[in-house]
Image 1 (cartoon, rainbow, N blue to C red):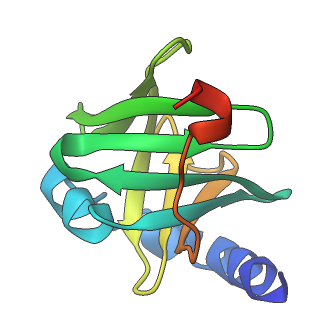
Image 2 (cartoon, one colour):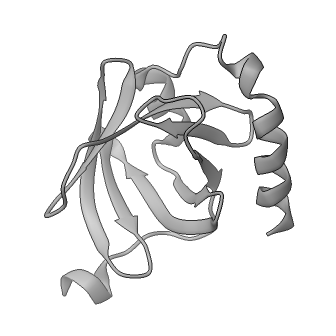
Length: 130
């Protein structure tokens, strides 16, 4: 828990330098996440876990739901669309080495989204009746 908080604080100091960086393309983002499960944090803490499947498909799970989804690259952002949910939800993402930081709607100064490799694997058995 201390790890993500410390990285969150440190990442905020890096925001001005990051403004000069180019966000990850869809191909770059896919190369970093495909076949992996990522814990998803905002400044309040862990809010979900997502498994990135081949073909730009995902499984998202939080405390209330489990959703099948897809992601695409649209206008320089990574956009998620989930079955039965409003969307798409778009963000720009930047590689930080062992983790990825994103900004909703590509807006600098918005609350960051931080993706860290997870030890979990998302399944939707309890949610989707599989």
